[in-house]
Amino acid sequence: MQKPLKEYPKRGEVYIANLDPAFGREIHKIRPILIISNNLINQNSFNVIAVPFSSIVPQIMGPDMIKVSLKGLNEESVILTDQIKSIDKVRLFKKVRKISKQQMQEVEKAIKLVLDL
Image (tube, rainbow, N blue to C red; front, side, top):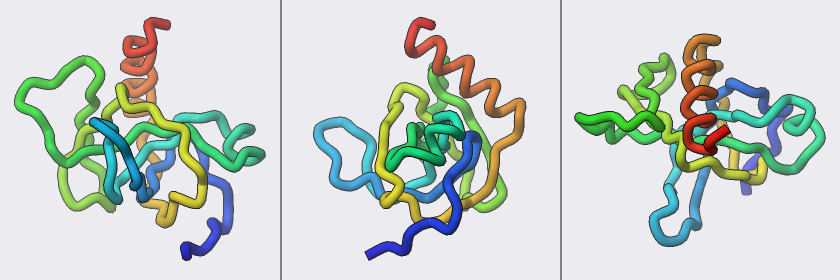
């Protein structure tokens, strides 16, 4: 059983999360995720809203993918903004770091495109 987090996850922070079990083509495994929900929800809810990372970086990037290299991750990765997930905080077990303001703006832009906002 995982230990509870000492403090609540904050928007823009990257955590390692266990996304299993998953079904069909849902992203799964233990992997980094980016918290995108606002801090009021993050502090008061059992869940957070997040987008996962993948270490498989395609040669041709779609507009829903953000390439990142972050200290604390072993390799270059891509943030998959088309895989928005609501996940229970018990799935989070290690904070990696916070992404930059510019990277967060890129993620927000991609999410707006994915959701047609």
